[in-house]
Image (cartoon, rainbow, N blue to C red):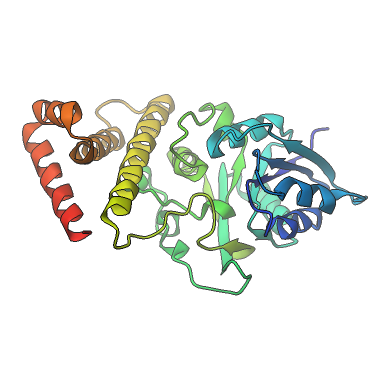
Length: 309
């Protein structure tokens, strides 16, 4: 029979941290799980370190090593490894984090007890040196509500590193298409639509704060860097809202549903604000389609830009 749980250790240029991540995966307690250690074409020694950690392993878990010949990018890599996995519970474990020994077991128990589509937990934040630090992950929307309307436009549903997914989130809605988004942007909303999100109210991993590939450095004094960062956020927001709109429609929400309306408005506003930086045809088209809304968005973004100078 296929393993019930697949632990997906996803790595990229994390040679400094990956040994701890792999050893933590191999040390998982409870029934055997499928462990897929997949490197997305790292240019450092990440894969060699992972390979060395696995060499000679004779424990209960099935271990599969995969190395992409070239870098696919975070979302394409996730889709690829989900396609490789045989479990119906998919537990991502990133190459700079450290799972507690009971993480897979506790997640499997939560799926058994509550039949969710997505599980998330607390974590112990650590810095690059492994020292405990502070984190704002507790501000994530799912710690307050999982109501689809309330979380429709949130870009922070839960701590992505703590999540685990039912395969049904991919089977029902398809793979995640946009390379601009991260899995938690999309899978969290899908699970909220279905009303099947479960919190494990305990920490299940050490989470590396501020060093992951999804981390965006805060605004600094360089205006060019600030503008580039802002454009990246707006493009990502557009892509997230577009993907969620598609999922809302797949779920069966009509065009007049409040969730659809809110997402349409959010996607439009992100595009209008982005036009401030892109200028030219994008700016003219945005004003022509929605003059008052576009001018308000442009004025707001201009003020934001001035303040960051």
